[in-house]
Image (cartoon, rainbow, N blue to C red; front, side, top):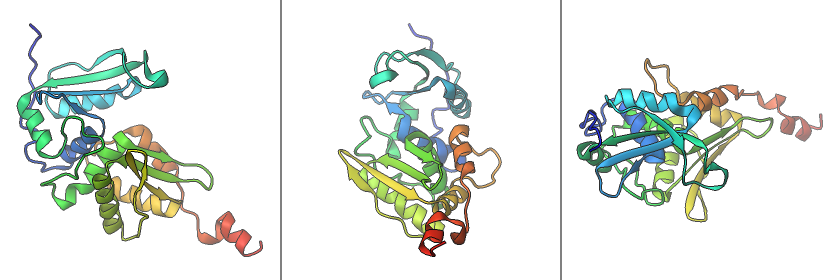
Length: 231
């Protein structure tokens, strides 16, 4: 039969540090608990293989992160190489499910329960690394996150409270909801919330790098301000 690999079965039982909170959010976005509730599976782009190896090491799994061609997927994803990680552990999956990471979760995902307030931003960074998008371009900086209505509203509420700024509520697009935060000032507030200087912080480098490109301009330096002032 298949080789049974070890894993820290109880890793997600209690979310009590920022790394667990991050991976919980990341798996809420990109992970898949199989319908039998005993297998955790996640596929990422091949360039994100080191990130999956970090997850594997954090949950103390001995299984390797494999590379293969995606047999399913949308459009041009089919046939592309992906990095894949699998953990066979009912206890690990039960821990995830107790915090809302359930089979077939994308449109019904609930906000995490039993997550200490001070770990919420780490969950959101993880979720954003999986289901978020950050664009930095002239006059069009936007951070967006997609998911269920309940989760998007919880993210908006949390970010608004922690950053002390109002946000537009999430909007529905077909079966899913989108939260968008626009403009360099607001996004730099989000960045400060999501990337505190803590040792061992988990994050996807490529998204962090885009966040770093966003610069706050003083109002009087912005095009819109100058045109309003007739400059």
